[in-house]
Length: 316
Ligand SMILES: Nc1nc2c(ncn2[C@@H]2O[C@H](COP(=O)(O)OP(=O)(O)OP(=O)(O)O)[C@@H](O)[C@H]2O)c(=O)[nH]1
Ligand SMILES: [Mg+2]
Image (cartoon, protein in one colour):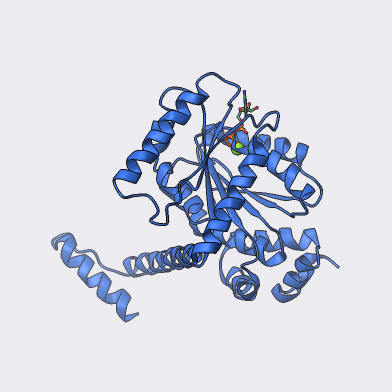
């Protein structure tokens, strides 16, 4: 029987018993949004929490996919069942990387690894809704860890990774790369730093830059009050060196979250972020609907109109 004809509850059951087509179908439905997606979210919500959600971000071309691909090779050897959500770069210029990601990853990933690309455009509610939805499906189905790869440009991309249990920020050797990462807001969300392409000159300079910036954030009181300091790991993702150290650092961060009760805090913040985005989307739809039936008198000020429209939405 085709999974297409299954109702949401049976789809979830089939997916949980390992039916990969059912998993794919759930992901498609969740990305599409609407009532069916909401029904799936309701069904899967009691089943989540088992997966360690790891976000991997960094500048375009930093080696995120290569690193992720290496992780999907070593994690199954440790008895883990990773799923990967690769968020496509939103820039049409980098559209060509979409297939590339898949090929590179599938080249190393074992059969038990599930890799899914999610487009930043064309999905109901956009990235801020489709990524958490897909993560929920993976988690409920039993994958652990769930890895989100997203390019670290744009607030939503950074937020999505910042909402993970552990955020890994990938930078490269080279003058100012760490400074760029800082400007993009990546320093604040990083739980683990990776200097990838350590086979290239300047890796130690980049490490020094990062250490310096971490010192400064410490002095300005930005650092975690529990004393956690993001470690800096050197990797050459192309040959896999250092990649197991990245996983060790992710595990150490997880242990820190568990020991301090911060895991619950992170997850509460993630839920809040998800709810806020849903409310935002729902209100956006109501704003559009209210404006569609609203007579915009050009002689009245925009402030007066806005107040009226808010009144209409509140009453509706
Ligand atoms: N020299 C060197 N090259 C690397 C290393 N890791 C990745 N690369 C190369 O860097 C290029 C980009 O790697 P990707 O893994 O696609 O980088 P990405 O961050 O996923 O790129 P986007 O998803 O497009 O932002 C590829 O040509 C890789 O082979 C490394 O450790 N050393
Ligand atoms: Mg990539």
